[in-house]
Length: 144
Image (cartoon, rainbow, N blue to C red):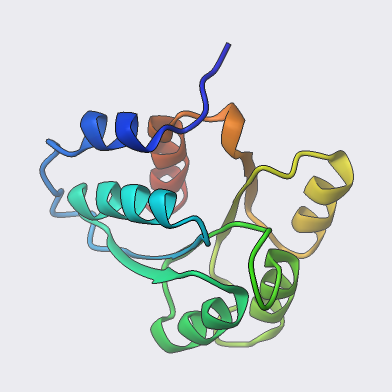
């Protein structure tokens, strides 16, 4: 049985890692849960990624256009605009449509997964089914 991403476990497990010289890529992390945003964002920074944070869908679209990140890590349940709306806008915009998007959400119905993939998500991860190290491996496989 897998355990859900635990903020404390994540910090303890990855905080000591030194940044890698090849990991200077930028990630837009869109998550409205402050604890997960802070913890996973810190872990990503500690291993060498530059992290831009957005706590709602409107900010996500604006920051994607401004920063042109190498990858977007996107929750679906967000204030102001949901993740589906964000994904749709990002994939329609010429400057952002090629940015890979990893959905990291608790929504797990097949309809939601199919919709996200149809809108252009690169992959779909259900938070409770993945440990933090597995999420980081997915990120590295896509942009590392």
